[in-house]
Length: 194
Image (cartoon, rainbow, N blue to C red; front, side, top):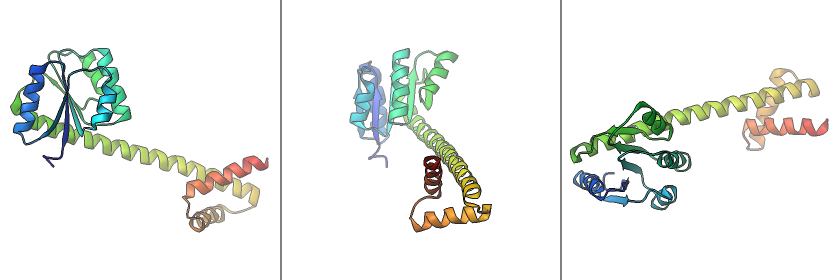
């Protein structure tokens, strides 16, 4: 995996970028790209399609943080940010913008590998939590649709709750559709008939 990981370094300072790049190469990572200009950062990230982003800034401004927010929404990637100085507000803004690892005054080659590992692990843990949350939301919404469709089948079709659920389940199986999709169809048809 070391050889195949695509790393993007975003840094306007050539000397700092070189330190990061050398640190990655010494750690065995060879697919390293450097972007020195932060304008149109989202476009560059989409074009380069990195697996992880290391951004090194003297002092992150709102424009850069806004671009990082767009990146985290459009092309979610693990992001580590190195800065020279910090305050609580900047940290909060960076985390809100999707930065996973926030390192203050810590740019040394020997720290690159542990910071990369931490960034990747935290990103994967957050992604798992987001996926679980999204699945739970989806299941809840589907459950609401099924309950509503059952209610319609009970009042309009004179079915019992058990019969209504079985009818929905059988219809989903026979049509090779999801239960929620069949429930949505029942709700839509009931709305058209009124």
